Amino acid sequence: MEEEKKVIVRLKKEPLESERREIRSRRRRRFLIFLLCALLFIGGFVLGTGASYFRSGSDYLPHSSDKFDTIKEYLTRVWLYNNDYENLEEVIEDKAYYGMTYFEEDPYTTYMSKEELDSFASGINMDYVGIGVQYYLLNNTATITRVFKESPAENAGIKAGDILKEVDGISLDGADTETIRRLVLGEKGTTVDIAVDRNGEEMIFTVVRGEVYSTVYAGLQDGYLILSIMSFGDNTANEIIRYLDDYRDYDRLIIDLRDNSGGYQTAVQEVAGLFLGKGKVVMNQTYNNGSSEAAVTISNDYFGNFRKVVILVNNGTASAAEVLAICLSELHENCILVGETTYGKGVVQSSYRLSDGSALKVTTSAWSSPNGRSINGEGITPDYEVKLDEIFYTLAVDMDEDDEYTLDSVSEYNRLTQLALKYLGYEPKRTDGYFDESFRDTLNVFKKDNGLKTDGILDHETYKTVFDRVSYVYAMDYHKDPQLNKAKELIDQN
Picture 1 (tube, helix red, strand yellow):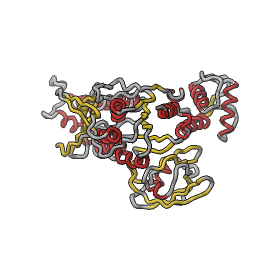
Picture 2: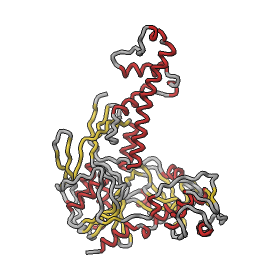
Picture 3: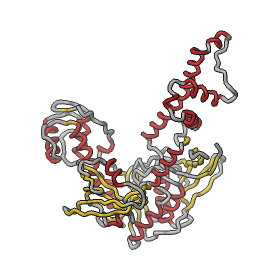
Picture 4: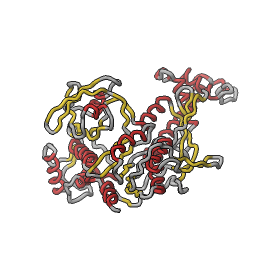
């Protein structure tokens, strides 16, 4: 395949540390399985059909000068399971490409199939055809938490806080997230009737589905202007402009970059320009030949009214999000970082699209901040380190549906539930995993509050409800977000 078009796609969304380890493991297994299969097939051919090769003193599989083509030939011709694949040759080739681009020291360089590349780009741009709302589902109730700017839903009159009840006359009672998503999404230009409950009054809106970009959300919260950037996609700068145009008389801004794992280099150059002005250094890049160059802001718009900026970061803040955080921290006249040390991805990838739609994603440079600081493997330490509740630093584990825990039991499920109840304000007396009478009583209070049987048993339904409630409270009750509260405190200071 020849290179059809070279597309520079830098600072894309990358996996976090736990995901990175899994990627390494998965790719290593995939590559080793491919090699092992090849060896087993060669051995099987010799033992099954080529005893004469042993008699002649040869233990090699005859092959042409192209070893890859020979292995592919025997896999497609004699492999027992070759009929399980619609296009085995294509699968073999893809496996080989993944193997060619696997390097232990560089988890970011990889081959990407067309499907993977398309999914990758869609994940960065966060674009889809629908109505443009974000909702949270708890106890079979889907509450709209965000209505995106200039979206079909906003144009139709749907508001945050509305409760989704029906889609085209189909009740959402008991519907899961995937069912709601399937009903709401559709082709551009088609209409969908959305029934909502607004403060006890049922309302029906006819919404014309359209393209939605959802990398950004902004609005006032208790008088504080908060800009959440979830990803750096092709349209992110324009999305920000649409929101912040309504707030040009504000001089203080909180930017939330938590769990933003990156995006495109050009996008972060545009976004940084909105707050720094045009032609300012965003980052410095160094290449394998020792040369270097500075990437500068390229936005034609500028929000110079924000004389004070507080940025929220955590260990999920990575890549392009780290670029924005550190360049604003160094160059903006009054910028403060709050939260936790960031991920620490200080390298840049370029993507080269191949003629069949697949691509080669390669690490091509290392980047440093405008002041020359490298954060690769170290991350950015915020000016004010603020932790979340302990429950958010524990590894949640699924409970089997048949499991039950009662008095005098000791388990990780008990401990996690105790921590979760503490976060929710139920104040259990212990968080060590031991199920005593006080934990039983606390658990029963929670069960009663959530319509569950008060039998003093921690079962699968109770466990799931506890953690559903934790997720809901974290998403909906910003007063229980200590990092955001600290940002508000700092933004008020002169």
